[in-house]
Length: 256
Image (cartoon, rainbow, N blue to C red; front, side, top):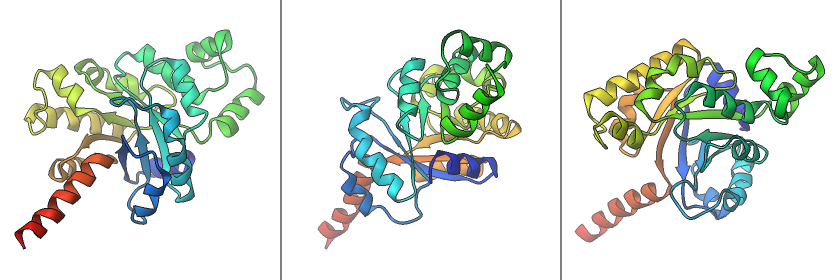
């Protein structure tokens, strides 16, 4: 599944499933993954000392299995977004809350290689340099690119309708740690206020045909969000899933 196949699945209203890779950079890991479990993986150096380039072998291994690979960028610089999109199937950009910023970031992803005055004009008025340029950008150069802004603040939740209306936004993804900190309820993932905020994000996204979801490492919390209507499901990460599996296996072994 490339970026276009992932986008098409979401456009059809289907639910897509993914996880984070924070540490796994060896492509051999992909042979251990069960068939049909994942539609996409988000590789992320945001909270580690790794660089995105170190995930390239994983990206190509995932492609051989038909799994899309999105990159969570370390920054919110449009040039960094554009660079990542030239290699990966798309980007997940942290802490997007300003609508004008969202327009710039989405444009960096889905209007490559336009820059400068031509890009400014397109963002401001929707005017392309020519019909040939529009076809090249949308049907060739960026046809496989997925852009996902992360909703991680109260302001972003309040401005959801405008963010969803930005051309090129393909899904909404909630980072619950940052969002709960912004809401004044740090890491209270079962707090009714967070659950209500997630419902708003899912509902507003659906009204704009934009799937939404939230990261959780607890299956019960992930299932609750799916039952709320989440269609962009990101569950756990490589290190946490390994820890949980080892804890359970060796707990049973030590019990005899």
